[in-house]
Length: 137
Image 1 (cartoon, helix red, strand yellow):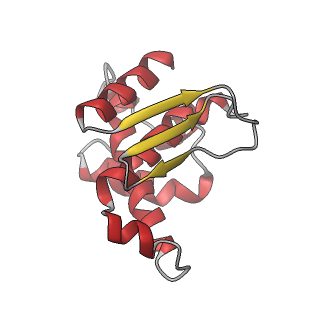
Image 2 (cartoon, helix red, strand yellow):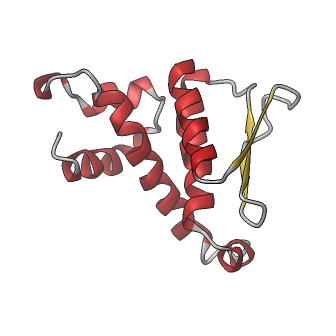
């Protein structure tokens, strides 16, 4: 899992995103993205460590997909679900290659993918759709 986390951090650096990975936060403190500074803060004390790659990919996606005006507008409850959904989809897209690497087509399973990264069950349709887009479902 650490190799995947490192790869995601390298992806962030390659896209000019500053990463702070800290164990100085309480477990209940959520990781977040700061769009204006193109930075993410990842709480290393996340209670479900299997979910860290998903969280990192999600926060990276916020920085990549939102501009400063979006970030200001995101405080409006009318827009927040839209931007969260976009970040969720892109996070899944970032994680799929790590799952399918070195697998044969018959070995790929959406439930196994979701289990590996502790993806919430409510995201199952997103996972299926994104795997189908990459012709690996």
